[in-house]
Length: 165
Image (cartoon, rainbow, N blue to C red; front, side, top):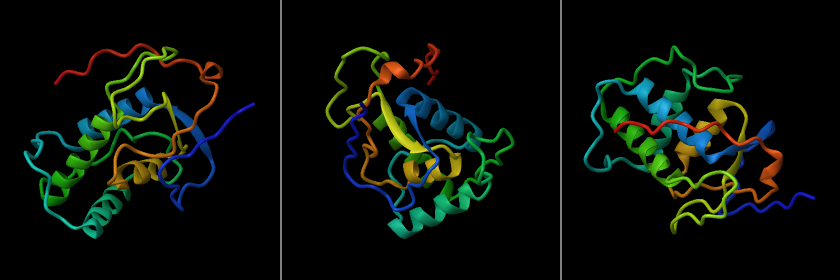
């Protein structure tokens, strides 16, 4: 029997199809997004000073380049121009990466540090645009939609190489 626990808040736009994502999968997706979207653009030293409505506009404009039915990041994603929006979006991606790691090995009972998601998996939309909209649009990280379930039914992700800094 599956026990479900949703924490923090449930966004209105969280609609089926949904699936459980390993946190490491989500980390890898965000890392790939950062690599493809920001070639040559340095990480800002401080959080860009923009309002929450501006954050939403930046994220919405960026996600327009991802097809509605794509389940992953497209390979031909155009780079983000080096403007305030690019710095803001890169900052938000880095926040999300920080909230997802460090990751315990799948199947272990290791407790993540305080403020990190208490589960190895998160329940998120299958389509990349909806998933990234929720992940990047959530200012109060750590992210939400934690699902406590029997993770032995999910295949563990492959061992991934360390990401170079």
